[in-house]
Image 1 (tube, rainbow, N blue to C red):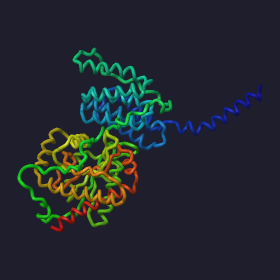
Image 2: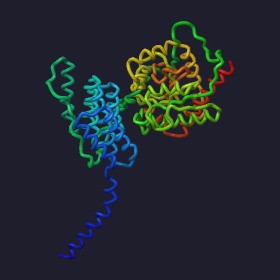
Image 3: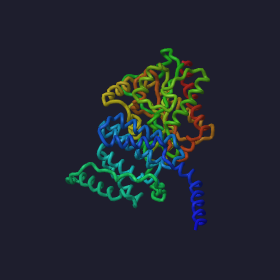
Image 4: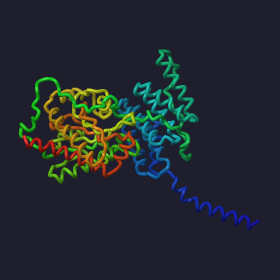
Length: 463
């Protein structure tokens, strides 16, 4: 009997010794547990929007710093929960849009997570209750039943769908408190990949949500010149101006990741291409200044202020595009102008999501109507578009010409210098995303942009 007990205890000790490393690896990061405790405290009382934002940032840091942690999806989900908390405190449409986008991005990145249906339900609540977008709410609720038929959110989703339908039909919905999600699942369960059915190809989601869909824009479209008095086509050259300093703006950054599809995180690609472009221009003798040179969040208003403060001769903002249509591809260049197409208008709406106040509308309109800088920006945009495409095609890359277009981008407002915003590719397109992840391709994009800037600068010197 004693020998059997000894043998049993020895086997038990051996098993624990083998399992100990894996159990330790599976433990949640301490920062995550602290952020969870902070989130629980926020839910228990009234707190400021800044407190909710700090909690959201904490979860995002945990997600980014633990690439091998198997429950990263939980950190991204709770980042969205904290952003929703901020939106409900601030009553800001911009904050609500950010929260909805965070939930949607979590589902895109981790469709097999046990929290994916939770995220879809919360996104539906935000769209319906805070953004007054019942159609988008319906889309998320219907997806729960379609993609997660065994989910504990199926019945709540059906109930909430009926409530939305009653309101749409003009019937009085039964009085009730704002809908609450089913409590999130315990995180010690493995993410069940079999739970998620593949989505139809249509359902590629948006850039913070989705950027513009260029279905109707087969031919490259040049932004039409503003109406009014004729404007000199080479005003900068006539005034004896030259290009010495270039301000490079890497879009998004920090807590704002931008578009995320197929392993591409826009803020990282933007910064990488910006630095590569800066290095090339520096070697050619230009002075280069950045609105951000690391993974840092810079508001649109601050980018505009920096554009003025840095006193550059040109301003180039770098972005990655995304679209609901997964087949959309191409390189596009934008100038500050009124949007002439629905796709340009939608893109501007998304890029301007974090701009200041409605009162800034007057500033944007007056900038567009000035016209003279618009003409110079168009000349710069034409050079950038043509030079980049020419260089990439010489390197063997088949890149679609998205054309030069006008749109009221807030980041282009306020500087006296010619300014453009480039969308270097669609990360929602799988093949283009693979190119954007390749450092060699990003180097060639930077080289093409540098060629365009140099070409524009030489054209001023030649006149």
